[in-house]
Length: 301
Ligand SMILES: NC(=O)c1ccc[n+]([C@@H]2O[C@H](COP(=O)([O-])OP(=O)(O)OC[C@H]3O[C@@H](n4cnc5c(N)ncnc54)[C@H](OP(=O)(O)O)[C@@H]3O)[C@@H](O)[C@H]2O)c1
Image 1 (cartoon, rainbow, N blue to C red):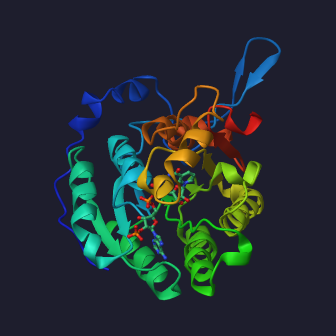
Image 2 (cartoon, rainbow, N blue to C red):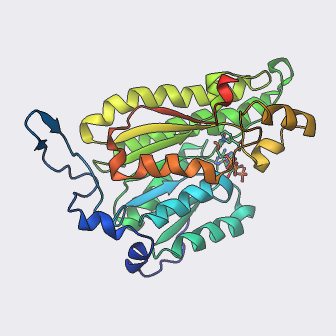
């Protein structure tokens, strides 16, 4: 694990992207619930959250953030004002992780890089240590890293199984456990699972099992951490137009899977971001223990 260049904060960047309006609304910061307000004669609305200047002053870790979904989430966090620890897996992909960090810094936030196989507990511990040592706090943990080896169970090798198990299961446990211990009250834990848990296709058995493990943990952790106003949710994307998906498929299988979505195409990384924003935002506080299937209705096909 290593420090990456710490740039100066430029809070004005937040105003430039339209988050100043939250401050004008006089709402409380994330993790500092405002008192309940009575609205009208009979209706009581509890306003537990909201935004100040979004995620300014917060710190987040995003795993597997060298590119694709992880990068988009890291940049989204930065856009909302959070400092970001950009995790990447293999040392030879450092350039991509640096690029993600540079994209975050465009929003005036600080970044750090963490490297390593998160199936190894020591690497997970070092990543969390880096976040708290560097930024003094941790508010958000997004476990985006994952691995897929497609194949009938009968044909998967021990190595295929271990590759998926390490990141989809072991890293989820180590990461979620450490996040439970270290995240500040009012924080967020988000796992990136998959729509396969809603209807496992053939040849996705071990991958589905790993993502189902994540979804099970989320349900229990939402209850364990809810009293501290920490939310725990997952986003379960359908098939996306990314190398992660294409590398496991043929042109024929891509064509077949694409037409399962009513809009007859694959999703995009950008189309996952509204759900990410909703869960991260202070207004998302009441979403807890949810498994958000973002797939254009693909599972209903
Ligand atoms: N793309 C889709 O269609 C789709 C659909 C549903 C869900 N998802 C989920 O979305 C997440 C992100 O996927 P993506 O499409 O953005 O692909 P991606 O960029 O390949 O993301 C996966 C990341 O996990 C990292 N990783 C793999 N094994 C690891 C390990 N043992 N320790 C630490 N990191 C490890 C990878 O690093 P290296 O590449 O360096 O190994 C990579 O950065 C994954 O969890 C995936 O299951 C994707």
